[in-house]
Length: 196
Ligand SMILES: Cc1cc2nc3c(=O)[nH]c(=O)nc-3n(C[C@H](O)[C@H](O)[C@H](O)COP(=O)(O)O)c2cc1C
Image (cartoon, rainbow, N blue to C red; front, side, top):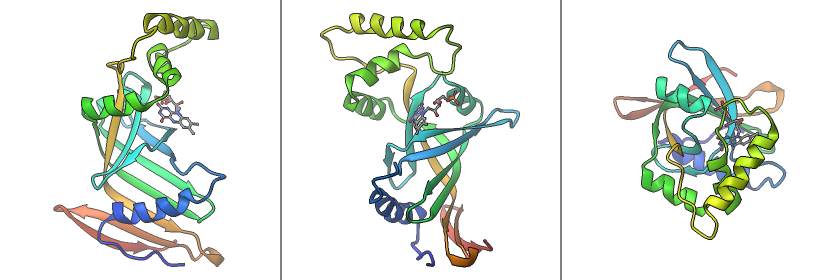
């Protein structure tokens, strides 16, 4: 199978994402997110893709986490999706910006209450002496917000990765895979193909 051409990569992403969602055995929103320090030391972890629009790809996290600090120092990131049932890998690289407070609020308000409590209780990526410390913080937050709506913690919210380059990899028999690259130059998308 050969990847069909679309003028912009987010449209093609939407087409493949819809196909990937048909596989109920795998969460297609799970994506590896790579960041790096100012000095260029890389780190990678999984996050969940929570929104897509024509500009890019949105995930949510704690702004004081390791990834949050790295993105503050060096606001560039890379993502890599793998959708095994349809044998597709999608890579995206580009600048990362914080979502607006209003957009982060809207998503936070849609989360279940325990996740909202967890966002307040977890000092993500900081050392945790014992699990009891976390459970104690959860209990504290439950009593602090008892009977009230829970506001978004100021250090928790979304990031938008605005791809400057995207690559779609379609697996094929005999390792004759198809690789379609989109690169943005002067505001326009150029496409090219790579040997597999
Ligand atoms: C499938 C999966 C999805 C995850 N989704 C998120 C997410 O959306 N946001 C998040 O902050 N952490 C998520 N995590 C946890 C991260 O992988 C990571 O442990 C955490 O964000 C701390 O990373 P850091 O110390 O590099 O900042 C997820 C983990 C897995 C395995």
